[in-house]
Image (cartoon, rainbow, N blue to C red):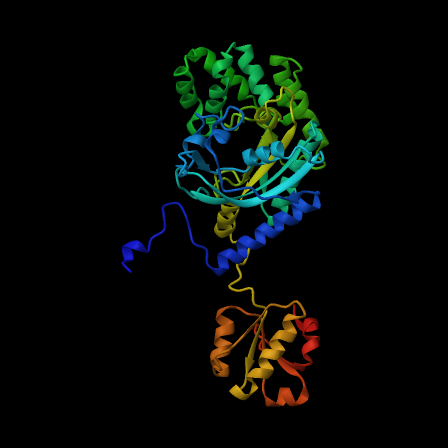
Length: 432
């Protein structure tokens, strides 16, 4: 086969055993946290209808997310997309299953796709890990989502800051400055780029939307208010009054058992059209390690009802964690040692005549819940020990004529080189 054919598509990656073992470890850690809060798993298709994602209750046809989506047609010429997130498919799932018990708490972990710029933490095929709850309109549900985020990153050993805002606050600022409601969503999408392109860049975008520069700079200045969370809320109440958005932000923060890493950021918008209340993004405290968000989400009370054609809200809130971004942080910081194999014990026979006993012993140890590999090539002892060392397998079991006669095994600790004779059924007591 020509070498030119042996190339991956741009923005996608292969994962060998070391990386895949670590990815699975992180996924398992996330599952443990999600399930500890009473969330159960679901699964939805990778391919979805284009109209679902492009609708005004989804991402909006002009959003950056839709512009970066992979689009295709089936043989019936229907417009389709590869899912670029889980929230919209989840809303569809809830809408198609009206008999779900509320509140419905679910998590989903799997691949999503975006045809966007490639950099550290951003790829075209990547995994997201989402938790959402439907049916609870109270901000206590938002608080629980933020608590999950804190638990996830504490478990992974990350120091993070969780930025919190409310879309109603942004809407109130736009109302104060009489921004046309028809372009409000587009304006919010521009505000969401403040960190990327700065005030001047956002002002230029807003001018292109027929907003006067002086007006744009004035309301951006309100959103750039500084101080503690309490001080920011107080300053904004002076400018805007005691609006619902500020009360919801205050209640969400006050319900948090640990408020240490919660930062109220009035300019945080999250560019997706479907958010209706609290929104949040999570970043490492040390942005030199990773500048991209490691998680984000918010409340989307109108999406599901909009899909169903209902006037009333169907309350929902959730958050998404990026597996790729988390892995990049781990690789860059070295906070986790990657395993080269899942094998805990490597069994070898001393001579071909002892192979049957070695196979039986390996199976006996597996039945104890231990991951076991075995040399089936009848290699020499030195070669087998070199192999086990290369893969960092912690223990080797040696089966020779003496072991068979005594109905024992020789267990070798590969870290310190020590050996002892034990009964096979006792091996669990000797593994660290």
